[in-house]
Every structure is written in structure tokens, then in C-alpha cells.
Image (cartoon, rainbow, N blue to C red; front, top):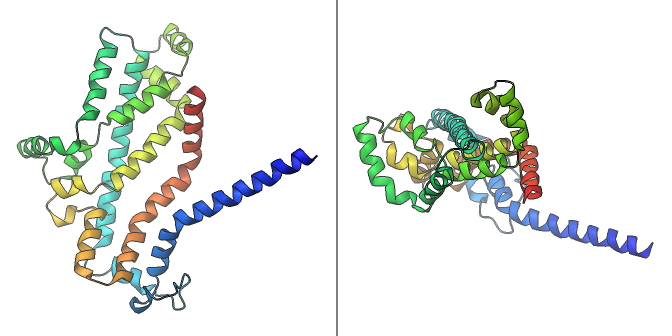
Length: 278
């Protein structure tokens, strides 16, 4: 009885500690959200006013319907991010299936070569990419930006590790029924690997949404700008109006929070499955 009581006490203490740590990590976001709803004169008031006494919802109206067309930038980011995520997940999943379930000569060597490209810094190939995009007329287009992130070595590696955990008996049984590799991929492998694929899709969405370097280098037209470029320009034009800058930042972060809340179940399942395999 005493041992059970000690274990319960230990769990309570650990829970309190983890809650405190989680709250500590959330404090910058809470402050940013609070500052976005304050008058400019109250943003840096001391002691910190976590709950605004005078809610300034007009800050968001000024951000969304001011000089910077945030609605257009939001649409650009959503279009680029969603299409990039769909294409990257498809390409990475197909490559992972090929490297894990299709036996061909030199498969492991080819996979090592693909992994070796991960060691090359992205900045080292910016100039060749820029020149190639100029020649192919992909510069200053959303299509070029989408193709830029359509293949991920890390995504291929992660999904290959998950695909390798599928027993070959399922593949062999489908082959005996006359199924092709594409049929096996879409009807057998993908349904079994929904948590893993969803986990990578969420990560790809976050990476693409937060990408600043790609749009900065490969986009020039203002009407093609993504939300990350818009935030930088808005910060420059707004000067020291931190309440408006925080409102713009909250607007940029909100889709990521929604995506993670919707997909957190799949992320936990994917991590758990990977942990069991490991």
C-alpha cells in the first residue's frame, strides 16, 4: 500500500514538473498572443499584463486589410505548402517503397548514394539551382518553388525505415493475386503506414510553411510572395509597431497549430510504431 502511494506521489510530482516545463515553453507564444491584442503603449508595460485590459482586435484588421495584402500572401503560402507536401509525400513514399520492398541489383548502393546527398548543405547548391531555374523558366514561379522541395532525402529515409517493418508476406500474397507494385503500394502498404506517412506530411507542411530562404531566392514578384516574406516586409514597414508585428506573427503561426492539433494522433502513433520497431 505504501509502495503504491509512493508511486502515485511520484507520478503527481512528474506531472507537475512536466506541466511547468510545458508552460515555460508556451510563455513566449502566450506573450505574443497577448501583445497582439494590446495597444502599442501597453506592449512592454511592466509588470507584464498577460490578459489585456483593453482588447485591440483592430490590430488584426490593420494587418489583414492594411497596405500589405495578407489574404493574398496567405493563399500563396497555402497553395505552395499543400502542393509541395502532397508531391513530396508521394515521391518520398514511392522511393521508400522501392528501396525497401523491390529487390534489384545495386539497391543498397543506390540508397547510400541518395543518403550521401543529405550531407550537402542546401546553400552549396543554391547557385546551380538558380541558374537551372533561369534556363527552365521556373524562376519567379510557384511551380519552381513547389518542385524545389518535391524530393526529400530525409523523408525517403524515414519512410523507408517504416516500410521495412512491413512483413514481406503481405507483398508476396498480393503478388500471387496478380497485383502490380503500384497496386500493392496504394492498396496494401499505404493503408498500413498511414501514421508514418501522416507524420512526415505534417513535418513537410511545417518545414515548407516556415521556409524563408526558398521564396527569398526564387521569387521576385510581390504578388507571388509567401507569408514568411510578407512578415519580413511588414516588420520593416511597420517600424516599431510591435502590436501589429505580433498580430502578423500570430496569423502566420495559426495554421501550423491547427495542422498539428488535427494530426497529433498520427504523429504519436508514428513515433510509437517507430519506437517499437527500434
